[in-house]
Image (cartoon, rainbow, N blue to C red; front, side, top):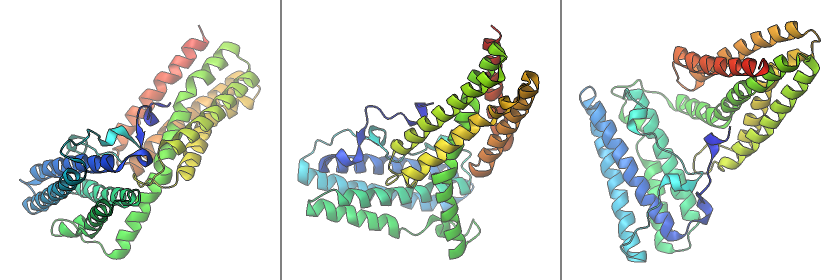
Length: 327
């Protein structure tokens, strides 16, 4: 349950010193340059004009890196601390290019736009945390550079359908909705629906007592909801990742976790064991297919792949609960 949000051993962004802020920015620019270079190579044969755009992005990221290194050398010397994204709690992550393959033009466009927005937020937040005028100036300049980059959606307009300002605003609003509500809510629904299957059905077949089974399901669902809610809310403050309010994300995750577990626990309010179990089984099937649909609808996962993953995983947990309950 907690593996998705584990952050033990990581530093909080607010605890980083000025040297570490610069070192983190240097490593982030290096990573982004490599990712853009991979995008360029992956698109070069089919979309040469778009590949050239990413070549230019590589040069921009390398120029940012050089400016950061020069300032670090001036302020702190030549020894740059080894600090990367994965060392900082709540810092935005990057998908390696092989995770977004095939390198369709729309895929890389979305990733690049997201990368620019995240880099802008990082420089804005980093600039707020330094009192050194030179460092603050450079971080502010880099923030504006990221913000003033010509939108990749416009740069690639010759090979993508152009969208007007209203469509761009709608897309941004939809993206924020997905980050703040859908992603944590989906994670909660998956956790609540799948992780409570084993205890609920193990209790059902072990006791054949519907009231006791309901109480176990209720406790498991509420407990998991509270746990997932706090875990999501404390995972990051949303300032760097752009995922929105941690309170909203926590409620979305917690409520959907509880809902996912209660769905197949509520039928055990029915006194007849086999009637309750049959209804609970039908609800489980509906829950798993609903999760697959949401994942396909909002997370760009092919429906059949999502269905196979979710239904197979749920079926295994369901079977484990029945086997344990009959042991």
